[in-house]
Image (cartoon, rainbow over all chains, first blue to last red; front, side, top):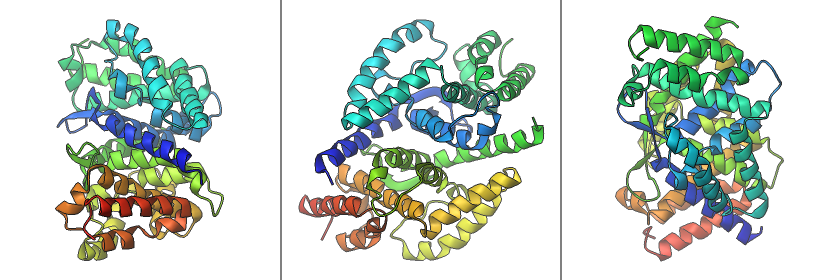
Length: 197
Length: 197
């Protein structure tokens, strides 16, 4: 065993413990507190295992999607969570996250730095079937949380149904079926008064 | 799309949100609060991606290990976390967790009920190379958390070095290299006074 290699891997494993502190705007489903990035990522990974059959358009590599969703938010240790409806924040997000990826992934041995960096970039670019499916789940999951907390985070942040439709429509690119389900959920949320029209 | 099938999958995805409430004895690495089961499972999944090269004895299927570590604690939604050094609790654990697996996994469509149930049982039995490696990580991760919190949870629960050696020695069955690393960490913890001899 190369001791230095394992040391770097362990250092990264220790560093990413900080992701347990990065809170999202979304609440966990009993509405008791904000969800953190790690909880969100785990939920996406399980959703990948269960819902991959709905990536109907192209055959996807499940392990590849799981890897992407597990690591996609690690950059937020340095860059923080950017609220998805904050337009100004979204503009600056790319620069902040790129710098974060540089620092964080380079804690790893060189080959794993490259591997994790490539996975993160693939997720961000949404050009492969795997990245499009991962992006669909990344939108569907908070939609579920919003629905089951009766739109708590939506109301708290003055989010309207137009914004939600616009933000979530790319679910269709990863999965038409899941987009159909998501649309019904949004319509239902409007009907129930969870989301202002 | 079969609407009933997706409904069951979503119901399960909603149900397992409760795992975010199940606290472990372990603290997150800055010692600010207990770690929950979801955070622990996510950490193990990333460790699987990074450390699979140390499953030296047998070739392992990485996706299979990732699946096991992602779902291995879901039964604790009903059964609760059983402290690993609580002998009485450990005896009753099997029965409680079996009942929990029955209820929870059967929320899913039949094929996925079987699939998740089989993964959970495989993890528990530790008979396959994948399950042995998953079990090694399941022990190494809290060891790291204990080391980096200067033995906080060990001291809080009157855990001694004999108990830690005994509890963790099966790391060797999944990875001799990681056991060597873990042993050094335990020795170091004794030396630094994090763990009573």
